[in-house]
Amino acid sequence: MLVAPSILSADFGNLARDVKNICDSGCDLVHVDVMDGHFVPNLTIGPVVVSAVAKAATKGLDIHLMVENNTFFVELFAPLKPEYISFHIEEEKHPHRLIQKIRSLGIKPAIVLNPHTTPESIEFLLKDLDMVLLMSVNPGFGGQSFIESVIEKASRLNEMRNRLNPNCLIEVDGGVNDKNIHDLKEAGVDVVVAGSYVFKHENIETAIKSLQV
Ligand code: DX5
Ligand code: ZN
Image (tube, rainbow, N blue to C red):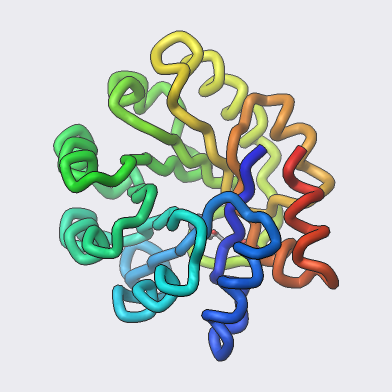
């Protein structure tokens, strides 16, 4: 299991220190939550701050867009050369076109599904994707509790991607901890995002290792 700590739960007064710390502690990706105050009722960070994160990070950035105007934000963050950019299928009229655009910028494209969105809704996009991110909380805030139905959704998506695109990773985001990690592994999940679990743990390295099952 790959682990992408979400910096939403970091200490923003010491952001570079915290980003270096998770990278030195063996995380696999750095998850960056971009919220615009429209698609979700919260507002986070833009390219100035994410550029500082990119400088401090020794692992690839996994940018999770929770915004209304996806294309605008893809263009804004592309110069920072993230490894992944993911956007919500619920907020995109032309997902196929946007996937091609992200790939043409040298970035791995990913799609995010909210808790109510079925994996079948992206069946015809799966072969063009590098990753699908399943939300296991409603997007907008860290520290919420895990929505159990994501386990069944991940199993269904796992069956679909094995058939249509075995190289496409499955990522789960929200409420992940050392209690639900084994069920996620069994369902076929490859990457987990963890914010409050990692940053509130007394030892960040122990927390990350406990999810790398
Ligand atoms: C929620 C974000 C998550 C969040 C996860 O909208 O997408 O990445 O930071 O935080 P935890 O792990 O605390 O649920
Ligand atoms: Zn996220």
